[in-house]
Every structure is written in C-alpha cells, then in structure tokens.
Length: 114
Length: 114
Image (cartoon, rainbow over all chains, first blue to last red):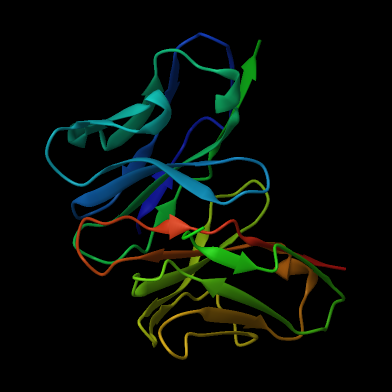
C-alpha cells in the first residue's frame, strides 16, 4: 500500500538556522510529490511540487526540496528559518497522471526559537 | 477572494444530530475532493468528484456520510447521526482536470461533536 513517512514529529530550530524536514514514500509507480504547510486552524498551502525533470525544486517562502528516487525521499530544506515559518508541514504523494488523491504523511511540527 | 471557500468554519453539534458542510471550489476547477484531518494527523482522502460524478469513495466514508456535487459546482458533505469520533477538520480541495496540476485547499470546517 502507498504510504508517506515523516520521521520527525516535532522539530525545533533557532531563527536563522538551516532546516531540513524528511519525507520518505512507498509507492510502486512514479509519484508526484508535494509539500504543504498548515498554520494553526487553517487549511493547507502548497509550498512546492515535483512532477518531473530537475530533481531540485524551488518553492515559495524560500523553500526547496530534492527528489531522490534511489532513496524514495523528498526532503524539504530552507537555508535560514524565520519565526513566521513555525507551522506544521506535510509531505504528500499522488499517482502521476492520475487525479489528486493525495496520500499525506503525519506531518512535522516546526517550532522556531528567537 | 477566488480561492476554495468552505462554510461553516466551525460547527459544534450534539451527538446524534445531522450536519452539512458546503464547499465552493475555484470556479474553473472541475475536480473536487474532500479530506478529513484528525488532531495530530495528516489529511485522509474521503471522496472525489469530477464535475458532478462521484468517482471514488474511501472506506473511511461510512454509510452515515454522503457527499454531493449536483451541478458540478459547489459540493456538500453531510454526516448523519454524528458520533464523537466524527470530530475532525473537514477539508475541501479542487483542481483542474489537466495533468501536472495541484490541488488547492480551503480553510476547512472544524466539527466538534459533544
């Protein structure tokens, strides 16, 4: 069965520090990959997506992610975290060429210390 | 605002009552999805419409749940005889039918069953 694993439930970083959030997927076919961010009580905002091509993708708010097929990973990175980045981050996959039935990970909650 | 709109944002109901939520997708989007998110978890897929046709339903969608999209525009999700386990955030998303497009999420309806 398809699944998405986000190994880190909580991460705390200092403002200005770099960030990497991990995501591993189990999917038989070529997946489409997404990172969404959710602020408390809010819906999901798309940070970035990977469909094909360059495996390093740039997103909004200074985030980037790298698709590594050999490791079944799609880790999210940011070189310098801002206090406003504190939120919950979800990795998601869907079948390429299909509709957007997204399979989400359990999320990583990011706290930012001043 | 041309994003996905969900109403109400919050709903408190007594166990056993029926509730109905509404989702207005982005106007040109012909695909519409419902997800459920419980505390500390990622969203889980409930159902998917292409225009007015409901093309997939998750096993999570018990007989007490029904969703409609009568004219291929807005959608409603009804829960009959609510149970405390139905307490969750219900998220709606929409997308275009074309390949390589992402889903856009509404802000969700938070249901509390007391």
